[in-house]
Length: 335
Length: 262
Image (cartoon, rainbow over all chains, first blue to last red; front, side):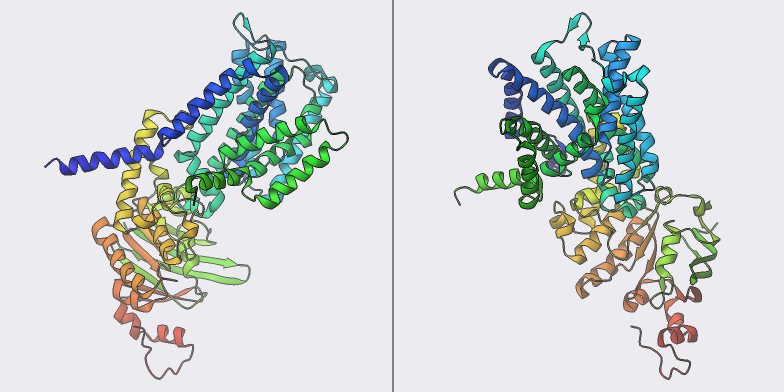
């Protein structure tokens, strides 16, 4: 008589298997290997590469946040440098002017950026497509202008030097410390986003993108979820901006110009829209590319642009799509 | 108190009268149909009930609640589910995920709980997945379960949409041309499912349908719309004999022979 019971148990483990972040032993092993590699990297590569990897980790956080908004929820933003700036300045100024400890200033900076995201989400409710693009563009430009004009607070266009982050008496200085901070935050934020996207909230985001009329008929509150998408995305940009400020050690309004917003958009389009792995690959590529191209005189931006065009032309699903094809190839090899 | 009560509903789009003083009531546990020629206002009426449209005048009460004071998502939370004339699916999700959207309103996960995927969140996911699995079994959608819905044939997509509505465990189900684009075999199955949904799940059903055979076999009450006005209401056999209905469908006053609807 315990057959139906056993059957029921089977079904339950199946479901649990389906909602796991790592569905196979192999995936767990690869992730463990990745952690080990990330841990030993500072010991084996030179200082500038460590700094570059830390910068890539910061870019990954912001790219994932932007992909939550654009790729998953279907809302465009051309003003993410604005949220990044708010995070960067909030975190720096809270520490410099109000003597906040880093551990407090850092999350608060993210929340302040998230709050601005929430506020920008409201006009976004009535705007779609190109109109939303222009509105968010305006936001990004306005933030930079306010930072230039309000020099008593922000230091104006001369910029400021954010203090080194510290945990109590332990001050994070040098690339290696900041690298570990950036990598740990990147891992937390990545797993957080992956969790969000396999939950009710992530499904509602995708539903809004695919059919907002059907989403609302399912009981999804469009106002709530669209503004939530903006807030979460801005929170990611704010956290990334704060890390960016403390990592680079100098920020000015110029660090957050329109080109920066476009750069993040490029990362997720090239990496793959609506894909966390794609955000990561795109962020790494576009962080590394300028560095490796800088040796070529006068041409780096031309080659950079050409790379963007080639990827979009031949890999419409981005690096994420290419990765899927390579995996399939090896799985089916030698057939 | 009527289950659904529609009073003097009127709606104009520019100069076009989409609905004019439409009134009717629906009894709990019944299957009713709205028929009428193209452009008669059938879908408009469904869209007013699910609050995608705001009518110019009139009232809609569902179990005493004034639906015109609610947003579409609040209507859904009151237990009213619907399907669309052309399936409005979440096309890049799997069938399973589409159906899970039907559970959206019943899931309580917070932003933080979702981000850390707390044990409560896991437990809730598992419970609702089991519920969705029952719907998949009920509609025999097992083979489509893990497929991206954009890749499914049209008839299956319509079924997925029906499943998504059922996953909401609604009290009242609005079906906008459920049989459109289905094969004869699928239509036969659809009729049985609609009856099962009412008999086994206790759901009250209102459908807009062009397939007269299906309408006549399945409905207790038929409402006929023409140019936005309700011209007839009654049991199927009475509707077939109704002179106004025949006129609306044939478009002439001296229709010689009765139309063979079935």
